[in-house]
Length: 272
Length: 59
Image 1: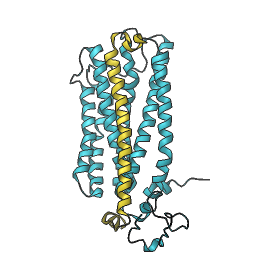
Image 2: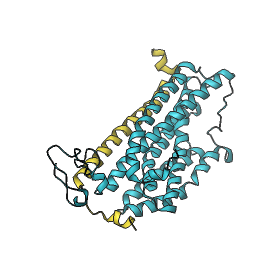
Image 3: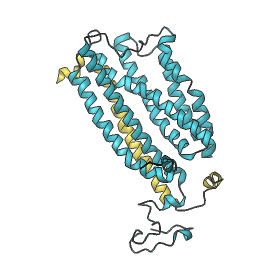
């Protein structure tokens, strides 16, 4: 019972698959977010030094992680698109950019509102914050570059190159707190508190991270469906999708009272 | 309950963070729904046409 994954490498087969998967990932994201918020706000205790302000961690760290991770996934699909010239890979990269930009913007926003009460400033030109801002600009740059090029296949290649060049920024963000003396704290998954407190805080943060992960997958799948329709519009398989008012030549599936012509003669649209 | 929303005096910072994320997720859902609906309607209006992009990729 080996699954042939190449079967889903075509937009024709991936479109319905993404439609089936997206609601599940959205539901998983909602459940995990509810559980994570319950752990973070209901169970986890107040931080000894930061008070209640630390609770921003449950949204700041997941969005910051996803901002970096989504970029790496986008770079992966871009590399595949460049190497194999596959349509769906480029569409996946295209679908990830807005969600990644959103995650980067939220990481910066929540970081600002965490920095103000703890560091006394909303913003500092510190290595981690600056490199995360560059990440947001890279996302926005990829989106802008695509909208500036009319030919989608040329846009695919240009965006893939920009994405891969910009990928060098991700390790810079990650190691920035080690390479430079930053205002931003170092990686502190282990908070210096009693073991039970730390484990509750950590589990709340991890559950919220998985929620953000599931949400990014759901959003990307949903968006890639729209992108497939936008780019495959006019093709025969899109015209025979359910709801398009045209059957695939199977009797009984056409619009009521209308006999669909055989598929080979579908040169013109049947009015509905 | 008020105590919960006050967040020990940090309510403004905590709820501005979570509020922005809630707004962002809702906005993304709305945008995704609208984009898919528009793409579907456009595809429906287009019907079957010889697309240059597809002919190029068929090589």
